Image (cartoon, rainbow, N blue to C red):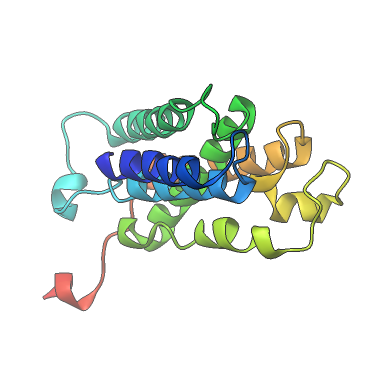
Length: 188
């Protein structure tokens, strides 16, 4: 989680140095959330897949605890700069974005493996800033779904999208774990 802290505080420090007070672009907030979630995603499996599949205690409980702790750490890092002149945004929007981002990371770990867990999240932190959407609750439903990380905290559609992503990703990861790495390097 040192990487997550470095991203969140590093981006905050850079933007604090170059922007006037109270201006922090929404895409920067989602980028910080996304990159912190990506750092957490690298911890969703260990170096030995056989060891990951065995344990005296059931893995689903451990995986659920792991995701919960990752969410709390990422959200805590984002909220650690709240109250400064360049906070990352409203706590409700940060919690929603953290939930959705970790849902996508978990889904990626379950289907692609932890090394590629970031594949599903990257489009949501790189494309929406360039989509011609007004980023208000007056946007159409599809616009709010596609740009859920940038919508205001009161957007029910964005909140529902993030919740669905979290439930799908967390359920898959908690029940199945991270996909085994099947690359040529680890197979030999």
